[in-house]
Amino acid sequence: MKIAIACDHGAYDNKEQLKRKLIQEGYEIEDFGCFSADSVDYPKMAYPCAKAVSEGRADRGIVLCGTGIGVSIVANKVRGIRCAHVHDPQSARLTREHNDSNMLAMGGRILSQPQIEEIAEIWLKTPFSNEERHQRRIAMIAQIEEGTFDAE
Ligand code: RB5
Image (cartoon, rainbow, N blue to C red; front, side):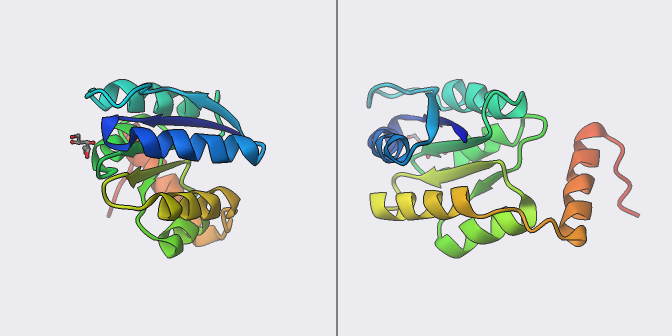
């Protein structure tokens, strides 16, 4: 599985440590930065990372910033991205089973490094449930992107 990863200065060390662990576990990683703890603008890293997932150049994406909020907002602007902003292991599992999320956002100033690694591991290893009701809801999200969704 190839993973696109990105962060801003609020989670630079977290991204570096998570990247090392995932590489050790055999994942292929494409790193969209940032590449130091200097202050940067998170859309510049999160957007190309999300585009890589959207265009099929990566299977999944993981984005990190101070809170996880900014990078998740950016990723969810990209067509086909379902980015889950996750703080706990149960949500990591449920967003894979229910939302088939293809990106994960976490906050380096909110979570500890062990929490980030545990959440990432669960999220990467949990398959989509493929249940019809979840497929139906995900299809509705795609219709919203296309402007064809009718909520009535
Ligand atoms: C950067 O200071 C901070 O705003 C950013 O990392 C993130 O938390 C934004 O949502």
